[in-house]
Length: 363
Image (cartoon, rainbow, N blue to C red; front, side, top):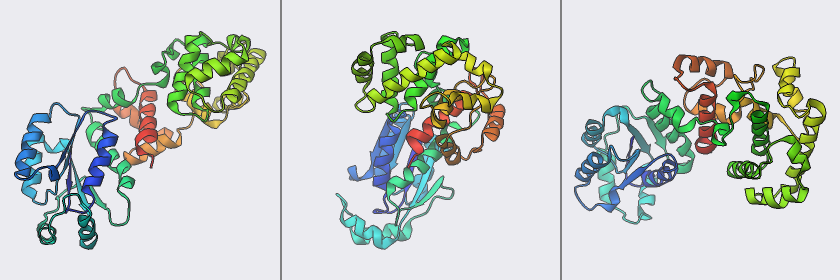
């Protein structure tokens, strides 16, 4: 994708371009072109840059005024309009003049006025932004959403969207939920308890993998292992610096409850549940398991456990809203049925939205 900024000097293009580059480099390879670094033949250089990098980079960000439509059309012609995100950046001239004074390479007041009066705004911009009162970073989630929507949410690229963002957390951790084995589902239960704790996602993953490393992946093994080993070895190695003792105690109590009430078989929780609501209630009878942890656990058990049909979370709703998708579970399922891709299921779609909402669209 190619992202071009159209606006006069001082309107906030460069700030947005730099911040956007930092976000997009987490998704793919980027090339950032800044017109201030070029003394002459700017749009000739842009043309050469596009032709050279179009097939090499995932994202090309061009920070230039593009105040003539012929330069905008040049980009469309080289790249194809469907691969270009055109951003119309606006700001009152008085503010631009003030900002221009503080630029590393300010242009003359006369030149700025010439561009201001001659600028030919994009006929159909993907997004129009006014930076007068709102900090540039506030617009990033909206810009990212428009880029991803244009790049992935079409028939040709929807499978790439799922591949890029939709890998299940359980699969990432090497857990085989499709087997429906109680041992595998308990592993995911353990991972969900960690994801639901007040720690980062990275620490949760590392801690689960540490449990895996020491082969402590059943309720029986958790209650038999030395408490100091849980705290000082597993939790510490996983990256915990807080709540290590608290989480260890919770895992022990949960494991004892599972053994005492369900013979250590997590599948019995599902079997004994009368319906979807009762399943959630039974899961939340486990010590410290609240709605968030319950949602994490059941999300990847859709289609594995018949009664697993948890509501979508706030990050999924946020991503759906930003991407102009339905924002209820029922409507998202209908959308999936219309756009489903072979070798993927609704869980992949939901996890893709979750990742976007959590990592990119959150303000």
